[in-house]
Length: 330
Image 1 (cartoon, rainbow, N blue to C red):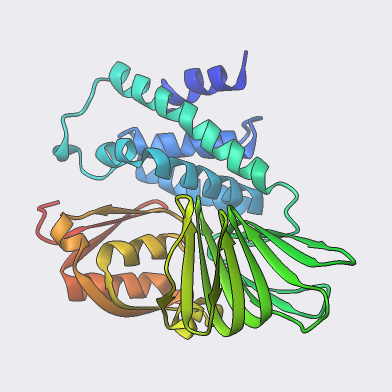
Image 2: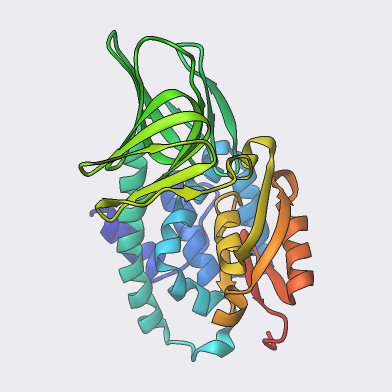
C-alpha cells in the first residue's frame, strides 16, 4: 500500500487519535494530529495529548511545524470546520472525509517537497529562531526565522545561495567578490551590510551600509543605504526608500511596524509563532493601519495588546491562534 493511500484511509477518512506507540513517521503522526484538530471531534484530552507528544522529542515539534506550514495552503477548509461551525453548515462525514483526502494530497506534496529542497542546507533556522552565523571569511550572517542558505566559497568568489527566508550579511572586506543568489536575483556586495529576503518568487534587498548591485532578469541597479529593491514577476522594481534599521530589527529580538495594515502585521507575526495564526477579519479590519512594537520573546502579550487596541478577539485552539473581530458573536 502506498504512503498516500495509507494516509487517506487511516488519517483522512477516519480522523482518529494518533497512538503513542504508533510506528508511523513523525510527519505522518503530526499530519494525523492536525486532521484530528480540524475534524470537529477533537477534545480537551486530545489537545493535552498533542502537547505531550510535541514536548516528548524535538523532532515531533519540527514535524508539526512542517505540517502547520503545509496546511496554510489549504487553510480555508480547516478554518471553517475548526473555528466556528456556525459559519458554514457542517458537512456529512463522507463529504468532510473526501474534502480532507483531497487536501491531504496537497499537504503531502507541500510538506515533502519544501523539506527536500532544504535537505542538506549549510545553515538553517527553525520557526521563531534567530541565529548568528560566522562565515568562513570572517564575515557574519544573521538568519531570520525559518530560513536557510548554502555557502559556496571558491578561490575566485564568495557565494551565498538563499534557499528560503531572510538573512543579513556584514561582509568581511576581501579581494574576492561576495555574491548572494536568491531566485532570479544576484546581489553583488561592494563593502556593505545588507539583507536579502526570499518569499517564493520574490526577492527583496535592503542596504544598511555601503552599496550592492542587484541583477534581475537582465536588469541591473545599484542599491544604496536605506534603499530597497525587489526582483519578482520577471522584473526589477524601482529603488524605494526604507528604514533599514527597522527592517533588520528582528536581529535584536523585536519587530516594529509603523503604518502597516493589521493583515500584514499578522502575516509577519505568523512567521515567528510555533503554531499558525488564522485571520477571520472583514476587509476593513484587515486594512486598518497600525503602529506597534512586538518582543519576539513574548509575542502572545503583543498579540493581546494589538487585539485590545484594535477591538479584536484572540482565541486559541491547541497550537492554532485565531484572530477574529470582537463583535462577531463567536
